[in-house]
Amino acid sequence: MGGKAAMLLVLGFSLIFLVFGQNFNSLSTRSVENFDEYYTKTMAHNIAVAGANFASNAVFMNKTWDDGYSNLAYQGGTINVYVTNPTGAHTKVKVCHKPGTRSEHTISIAASAVPAHLAHGDYMGECGGSASSNSMVTIYSEGIFQGDTASVYVELEPSNFAKYGNFYDRMDHAIPATGDTFHGPFHVNSTMRTWGSPVFWGKVTSKGGLKMYNTKNPEFHGGYESGVDQPRPWDTTNFRTVANTNGFTFKDTTGSGKRTDVQLEFKSDGKVKFRYRIFDGSATWTPYKTMKLTDLAPNGLIYIEKGNLFVKGTLKGKATIVVTKNKVSNCGNIYQTDDLKYETDPKSDPKSKDMLGLVAEENIRLQYNDETKHHDIITQASMYAMKGDIGPDNHLVSNDGVLSSWRILGGLIAHDVRVTAHYNWVGPYEGYRFVHEYDDRFLKSVPPYFPHTKNYEVVSWYE
Image (tube, rainbow, N blue to C red; front, side, top):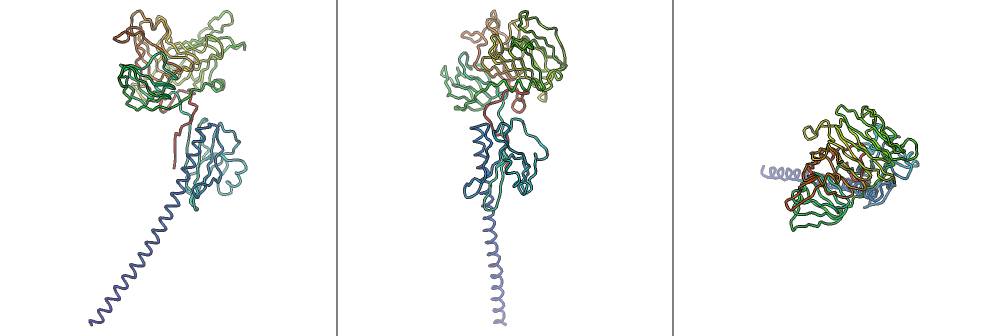
């Protein structure tokens, strides 16, 4: 029995080790296979990411770029990139691309490439009939490595100037100083200069460096970055086209290019009261007319060609008013004549849908009159002065020793900073003290057709 038992014991252990060895070999094989699969999928993904970065950089350098890449060799694999660009130079065809198990995406390809895409299951047109923004560039990047395919989908759009609380090309006539507090993004296309310890709650950027006066440090709670260049293009062609399509245009209807001034008052019931005059010798104001804002300008854009705007009131709805000069003297200015505010105040109701953009080729001024002199004034809007600045009229700066408040909710985007008050050793003693709050809604939503930046930025990245 002892010999048989020993034999059975040896055979049992042999069988156990045989099974264990087989399982170990199988586990090792599966581990190698899993590693190989992980490696190929990771390489395919990294190649797709690289293609998306290459294409994004090309769009940053040239906003009309839509070449894409076809069978571009990279890291032992292949990159294919399809670009849909509304401003692109090449005629392309939209197809719904179905990359295996990955989500389908709309891509733009050369007409010659359509048959090959249809052959592997793509179909003509946009996926689901969806449509992108008129200014959006889409990039679809495929990375292929040893039979595995990965994809990255990127959407880029120009940034909008309404997102800034303050934006200036230069700061020659006034600089942030101790006692000043700024909210929202702040940018200067030159050297950022400060006096004492002003407070900035949003991100601050500048093209040049930072120069501090009075041996104190500003407080950058949102951070500071230099070397950021953000040009402010001025192209009125798009404004004119959009206003003539489904907005409203005030201009000299005789075709002789005379100056046209407009008086406009927003009403809290969603209507707008207005009149205008053409400087044709008499410069007589037309009778007032009142109508719904949505009837006057269904798309929200009001365009004044070669004129000036005088505006006040309470806005219910969304609107942007663009005032141009077009080489005509004494034009391109916006004058606020009294309070200009929203029917629903976003400070008390963040869901407010009321939103206003004021865009002037020259200056935006708080006009000197009986409603503004010695009075606190409210402005709720994002204001954009292309070639000039934003601030009170000179007579309001010399305000008989009275210091009033200008309460602004929105943004100030201008060529230069304007002096708003006279100062002594204590601080401002006459004119207007800025009480500026940023409208946080402008980070996600902006007034209709408000000017956007020249450069694109990534707004979504899907892997």
